[in-house]
Length: 301
Image (cartoon, rainbow, N blue to C red; front, side, top):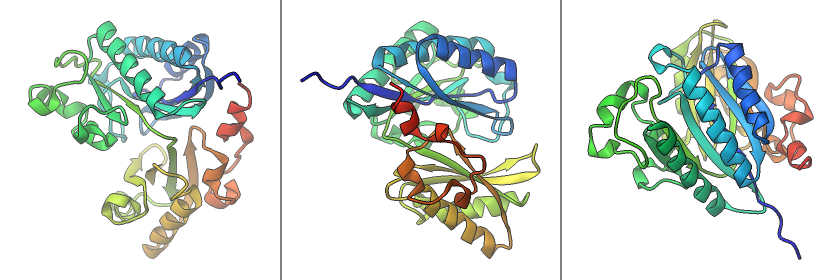
């Protein structure tokens, strides 16, 4: 019996969310590489774009290398300001097993991509998640700690020695975080408020590290162009904490503070099970289509 071909997902986050021409060019680079581009999510306040694509290992590798080249040419971190934490122009490159393989395949590819990025572009590369080579870098917030602004000093310390590439600060490019992980659902809730401290309090209440929901990372962020604030969440295990549980928790915490919820926002795609049987509208996702479901894209390859 023939083995099932390995299909991996890749969700690079790039530090550009305001220039449509650059974002369109980066998306075209991914498509031209042969990867299946599922979604592009850009946010001007985060000043960040998230490219979600899938394919076999060789295709994913080619797409990431092409995207890296284009992003590092187009983005100058010296001029970058945004609400979302970041450490470089090509900020994070997570590899996710989807079909026919496992985390070992994702880790092997992450290490290969990281080495090639460091060799080609002479940028510091840190591995995180299942690809981490140091325990203190397993969690993405720890691997990115201090962000771009602290990177120059960090690179002079033993803790800041990169896993690949030179311990050299390139102010234009910054550093790259390359990881391997299971499926993560990025889900945001926009509050009907401009109170950033309230958003941070709600984020603190719902995130696991503060005693909140299992497998949830959360930040309170300002959205100046909308005059609103947002609870930005990563659901690290959508089976334990699906989208409706996270949404309802934010809704309750916001109501306790006399704040309404404007909408939910899915970044990229998600498995159908992440909705846990609820309708998209019930968690604030308006105009939701089947193209936002991972299974729709897996059925095409």
